Length: 150
Image (tube, rainbow, N blue to C red; front, side):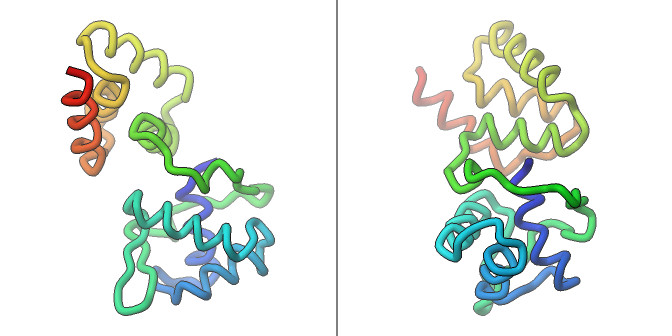
């Protein structure tokens, strides 16, 4: 499941979009028993780099509406969330979160990549934009992948 769901959980639990970092660590590690405290801190770092949260005045602020995120009762995040994800993976996650079937998206992105001669990252961004999904934060990453490949 997605990074967004794991990040949203502490905010939903506390009914806010701002929390002290230690409250997020406690919610993820002790309350939910999803991660160790060190892993919870790592998750916060990944979420910050991916633009899901920002640090303001010693607090973490959700850059999305946590209340709009559904957290399934049986949800348990995978430790893969703790690693840095590629732009392709991030776009794919955004597409799936918006209800696009994962296999359909991957197939369409691969076709677009071949048709337009783009990197997988750039093709994913083009596909997401065609689907009306905002991935503007990933455009610079996709652009730099294009430049590196040439």
